[in-house]
Image 1 (cartoon, rainbow, N blue to C red):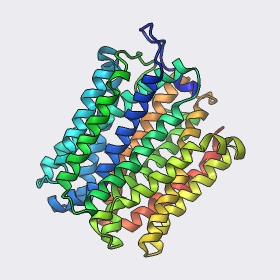
Image 2 (cartoon, rainbow, N blue to C red):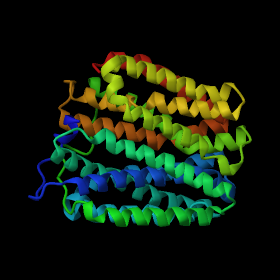
Image 3 (cartoon, rainbow, N blue to C red):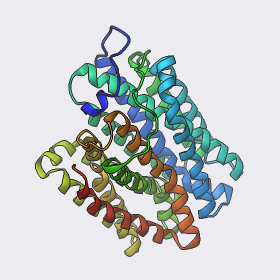
Image 4 (cartoon, rainbow, N blue to C red):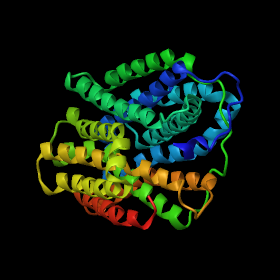
Length: 388
């Protein structure tokens, strides 16, 4: 994690973060994952209420990604000026208060605006919690970033499971979202004391034109984030429309994905040390490709869930290995290489929903899944072109 901690200067406050700040950071990562997973289970309801087709749904989901990507470059200056605590409180309140509206809005245009603002809240939260995580990890003088991101995955599991469980009990999407909102607000209140009132100014530009090995690393991150976004935004739609699973169970696909990704992240350091980064990336990409193809080629919803689990375990350690490789490449200075790769990665999140929706509209959603599977096969062989 040295390449991340080098990106910020020493905190401008004398009090070093301790256990309270560590717990608060884990809680914020959990909240972010919980909120994202709760939305994933609501996508079929949003589509049903607005009456849009797959192509239009892809454009609506593009609003969410666009809001997140537009807000992320602003987060550094916001946290520098107002501190992590104020920014995180506002951003968490923004996306969590919007959540109950998303499954009941009947107008596609209104939903587009709501998703744009929801994406702004999620994007700022994702960046601000990482700003705090970098400071807390540096003060602890030991690697903690994988554990923080593991809590994001744990939040995803809990969010998908909670939302699916509430819907299975017959609770309406609106009241299920209100229960999720209350839970998030309680967690936020409990973590306030550990949220930093300051932040560090980031070094290097927010965006940079990648070249050489950095371009390859960024392209791999783009493909992996697109695969992850495909599961987040389209797994519930695929299960309910193509495998005839009840809408209340649509979030199970993401839950399986998030569970195995969490296992992969929590054991990733030992796996990479034992097998080596090249083998982990190659095998992981091929496993993810198989997971994307399995639900399409075999018409069985249990096997579809297995496929989503394979995507989670396959993708779990690819991006961390890519970020480790940034510290070894010489194509670009590290202070601009990290923003460049991060930008390309999140472009995958932004372009993913719309591109999958476009393919689904003009061909079919299963073919769109196979397209992403082919991209992961390319990742498996392209990774050998860089020093990971």
